[in-house]
Length: 84
Length: 521
Image (tube, rainbow over all chains, first blue to last red):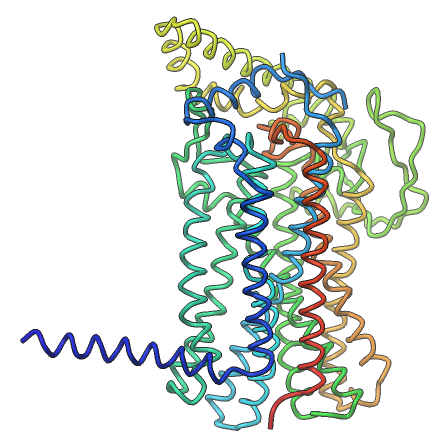
């Protein structure tokens, strides 16, 4: 009773895998080129920029949401109007 | 007290966000429009069975794929900037952006991993109709994905559907539908997607014109021009119509931006719309500090601004001076000094609440919370003007008038120009005179950069025109910005400029190569 659904699930998964595998392996020149660009771009965005240049300011400087709320409340209530 | 943020920090943070958004927007509108054009072409292929339509579909789909791939994830950087450069703003916005951005993220993921894969990998592997359905789903999905981003942006232009929680200093969404059907969101979504359709149409017309000039692929070029000119004409008419819808909404929710778009300082009934104008700064003051920009020359369409705003030439349209001194009683818009007073009152209440909590007077804090922050009347009458508490002069609520005026007029002028281009393209095509009119083929090609300028100018109008607000009336940019060093923002600005320029160069070079190669036989 359990064998058929497992087999069909497996074969569906295999077909999907095959679909993507064939797609990637028979990709055209431009397809390969843009995938290289995508991977480099994602590396720069998520590894270089996010980790080294874009820390979350409130998470980095405050330990709890209560402290973050306090900080923002101070900004909202204590900041003097800008001169310009 | 906390000193106001350093101006160079604010300016660099804004410049960085603008740079990222402008580059991101180079990729997005082509995706929005070209996806539909490709779907229309593929529909023709499935209906006719003609293999030429398939070649044509695959050619434009390739250009769509290059643009999509290079542009993908460029918007993520904007979210990084929220957390790093605009942390107080991000915190204050609370969960308002959470739902729309989560829906967008999920939609984009499923769209990209499933249907785009079928679009590109599925030729000859899935049935024709299934493939066609996937192409249409990519088009619909990409545009729905844009919806949620635009809903979030519209909330910043007209914050609705939320309450402010003084304990957490965050806004909390109480009415999802009010956020989704925010009048600014409806106008913005329609105006933006139709402008994306127009941009893609002009792009297809321009590339097709190049093929015709080179006397290559004439069958493909003519049909591409036919489809894109019809699609572009309908889209440009819708852009004009939705722009007109926006005028009425803006006059109500962002009257200062609306007046700045027309460089209107003194309001009137029977107000005319400036079709063309050149501004010059004068010594005259708007109020006490900022100078008035007068027209050196202008061509005005009589009464049109009043008609656009209220449907009648008797409609009163307030100018920037009127908004400072009197507001607009017919639209229940207060004078800016009144809004400043109300904002200061709301800020005082928030300060009292914070102090009561800090001193441990919980009973008093609870009373303030219930009587003020729990009251709709307090929100509508006072807290909605909270941001005005941070202005030192009513003129601070006025954006840069020349930038707003010129960006708006460049967008509108080019928008109407593209209507003419689409109409002329169709006329010459039907008269079979397109190939003989090389000047027009050149014009179509030159329209490609122009349509990008027009599209970006629309965003410059929307975002520069709402200054000084990061959230209209609630928070100025000076409060939303993170107190980090201006130097670090400058560094990442330069990094982004290099990264995005490299991406753009990569896209353009791959696209040019594919265009030169032409459709595969």
